[in-house]
Length: 414
Image (cartoon, rainbow, N blue to C red; front, side):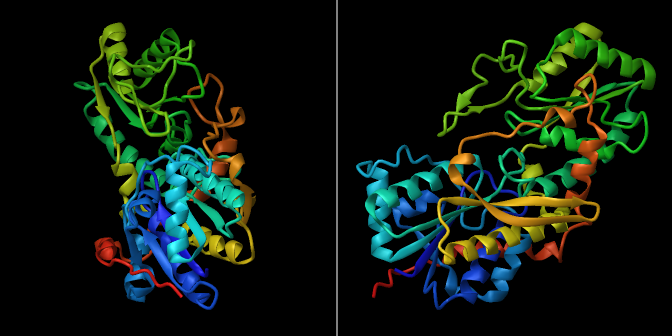
C-alpha cells in the first residue's frame, strides 16, 4: 500500500499542469515511500473506469515540459461523487480500485467542487478503516476558493485579460464614433475577482475599463444606465467589464433567454446571457451601439501570457501536497498565506476540506470602491504582485506535454 494516484478536475487553467509536474517530481524524489504514481484519466472518472497513466514511465524532460502546457494533461472532468456513504456505488467502486492498485495517497488538483470529491473520499476512507491520505491542490481562474490568499491559475488569467483589455481598449477608442460601447464578460459565476483585476489595465483617467460590474453588487438598471451615460459624455466611449454571474436586487441572474440557465453536475447554473442583457439595456435606454467580447476558455488556456509567480506557486502547491501526505496529513487542501505584499512573500499551509468544499469566496467590501463600479487601492495592492513578470520558459514547446495520455498503467500488485 505505497502507491499514489493524481487526478485533475474542473476547468483547466494555464498553470494546472505545473501543479501536476510538481506532484510527479516530488513523488519521484520520494520513490522509497511512493512506489508507483498513477495519473487518473479525466479525474475521478478515470478511477471509476480504471483508466490510468503510469507517470513514473514518462521521460523526466517531458514531465518538465508540462509546466507551460495549457489544458489538463491528464484530462479534466466535472463528475460528482454523490455521497461518502460506504454503500454508495461510486464509493464502493473507488475503493475496490484503490485496493487493487495498492493506493495509499490520493492527490486531486481542482476547485471548490473538486475539493468536495476529495472530502467525500477522505470521509469514506475513515469509515472503512482504509489508510488513505487525501490532499487537495487548489486550482481556479475564478479565485473564489476560500481560506487561501489566492488560487493558482488566477494570476495568469488576469495577465491575459489585462493584456487583452489594453489592446481592445485602444481598438474601442479608435472606433468610438461607430461602436461607442464595449462590453467584456469574464467567467467567475458568483464572484468578481476577474472583473476587479481588469482594473490593472487602466493606467490613467479615461482609459478602460470605465465601469466594472461585480456579481457581489446587486445590478440596478437605472444606476448602470446613468454611469454609462456619464462616461460616454466625458470620454466619448465606454468600456464595461462584467462578471458572468450578475444578479438583480431580487437575487435573479441577469439573463434574457428563458433557457440560458442549466446546471452542471454539482447543481451550479451554467451561466449565459448577461452580455446580451447589458447590450440590450445600453442600446434601448441610451441609443448607443454596443459590442460584446467574451474571452471564454481563451482566458483559461493562455499559457503564452502565464505569470511566473503563478507558475512557481502552482508547482510548489503540488510539491507541498506530496510532502504533507508523506507526513501523515489528510483531509486537507494546500493553501497560501500572504505574509507581505511589498516585497511579496507567501507561505504554504493546509486547510480542512470541509472549509473549502462547495464554498465560494466573494470579493470583500474593502476591495470594492465607492459606487460599486470600481476597485480600491487595497485591491490594487493585493492583485499587482500576482501577475508576475511574464511567462516562464519557452512556451512554444508546450503542446508536447499533451501526449502524456498515450501510456496505460498495469496493476503492480505485491
